[in-house]
Length: 230
Image (cartoon, rainbow, N blue to C red):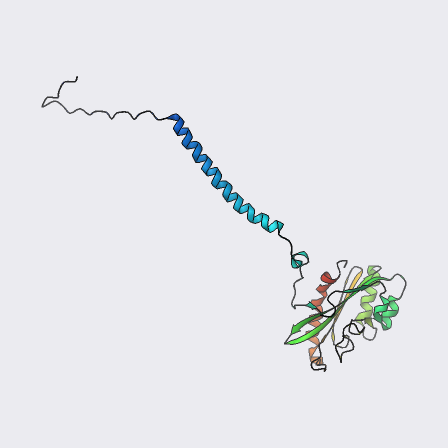
């Protein structure tokens, strides 16, 4: 038994008792539990993130996603009476004047696609006829383009001229001043446009030509929607 301290003796610091030894099994158990908790949380986060990606990949594509419309200046919609393009291998049967004679040559044209669209500009409805011709080669396509660019040489018939679309008093879209054409290798795209009649009367004037030409230029891109082989 230690002797009692006497007055005047120097003060002695007593060391703190050492902590009791820890339980190694308990320490490892806590560490394992913490790692498991982290793994569970990480798994939940990954499941949430990857779940969003999977839903976008497996979603059923809409028509617009499957065949997106090309972007441009004007908004075109298929004419109500002709919701789908018309296709024929007899190109000459869908042309007139010198253009018809040219297309009647054997083997010169393999397919013609015709469609009609509408668009709105300045609160007026515009009828837009699009014709796509698949020629036997780029040289013949160039000849056709040169021919139709001239006045008085005929053209590919629009569906108003053929009577498929009835919009009295218009007998065709070729008198509407609007015109554009382009050649892509062996394919020629021809567009004509006219303002739709109002109360049975034509409202197109010479002053409308720049607007109609602009619409036709923009409508050349519609070939990507109506003819997948172009």
